Image (cartoon, rainbow, N blue to C red; front, side, top):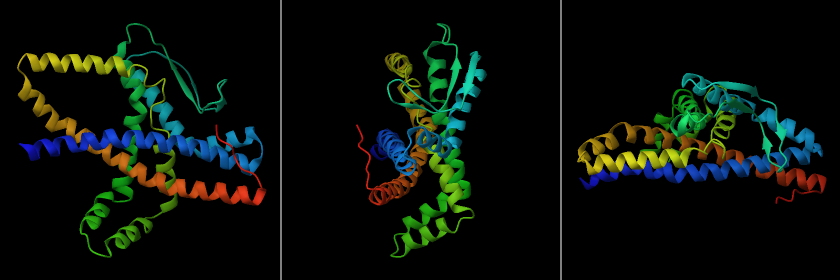
Amino acid sequence: MEQTLYDTLTPIFWAAFAFPVVLFMQRWINRHLQGVTLLLTGRANWSIIIYAVIMFPGVLLHELSHWITANLLGVRTGRFSLLPKLQDDGSLRLGYVEYYKSPDVGPVRETLIGGAPLIFGTSTVLIIGLLVFDATSVLNILQDGTPDSLSVALNQIFSTNDFWLWLYLLFAISNAMMPSPSDRRAWPAFLIIMGVVTTLLYILGFQEALWRGLTGPVVTIFGYIGLALSMTIAVNLIFMLIIGFLEWLIGRVRGAHIQYG
């Protein structure tokens, strides 16, 4: 039972740990990538445009996921934009989808709409990781534990056709898939509802049904989310090194640096 409980909770705990790590990485990348483009151009407007172009594939998938999910759930949508805009508070909005948040929408549908980019994004990351980079084979090589397993795994990854194109798509999609604060607005109410339902089921004696649900589809879902977040962390580490180096190099050449607030 202890081993079963450990196997059950591990993917959930890993996903819970990796989620804020990816959020931190996303914020760092967003700030410093804009910093690099500002150092390159010297003009804030141009840096915003270049940054938006770099992130466009991810932004497109993010906003499309909102729009598709809202329409599938019967929620009326309004304007759809993929044009970047600097907000009054200094933040950058890369796109948006309007949907009508009437009282009958409720926290469940609003949570699904808000969380759609994470669902679509992780699905796309998994498809690219498993089908293009053959992540399963790479993991098996690394688990062999032989001295040259890391070099063999890296060689397999870098020998992927159109490696840099697929790596860029993973980067752009994974750094636009995290729900924004407005997307997460209904999550507390949704979690309260789920907590109440779970508590009632437990009180009514449905512990076995809860356990089967936890060890079945829930664990599978969190396992896939954890895998997608792990691939995102690996890709982000590569690009954080590249972005950090470019920011240092361009800053040295131009004799300037970005002061982040």
